[in-house]
Length: 233
Image (cartoon, rainbow, N blue to C red; front, side, top):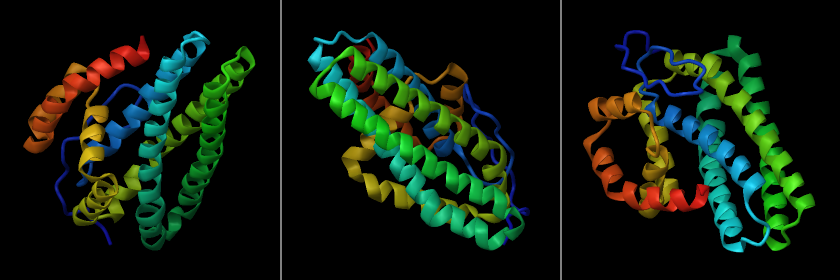
């Protein structure tokens, strides 16, 4: 199955993004999530290295935010593992090695995800310099592993999606993700993906994003920005 007869849609480009290939699927949600992972894992690493060991409230807030980022990552990868990769494997057998690699990268990211969670739990319960070192190493490895995967997906995985997945199937995947979050989760997700976007990305959303998303972003954005101002210090 191909979608080569479908017109190309404008694609969002964000800092750190490896590519933004043309095609019939609107990858805005994908690129916003990728930007959020890159942004927040880097900021979490910086914050962990700087937070005072006696600042238990901020350490707890940072741990809570990591849990949120990893929840988003879990939903993101679960949808790909259960819907995207099986479709591509069936429809693009010539790309099996690429799909194998992308799936293996999920597993490697999961390994560091678990280590980051365990290290943060230990650090939150008993903050020490040794615990900080362990946690910073886990976050750095997770950021590096995930960053390499996101770039691989942007350069090789998304082009396959553009050819072999229809806009209707892509919309189905988005609906599946929304159901996993529920209303409150979606409100937080919108605030997260639209936080501190560069001006050109904000202009892209004003031109092409659904009006209800823009309205929700304006409603939840101010409170989320205040929370992030405290979190990042």
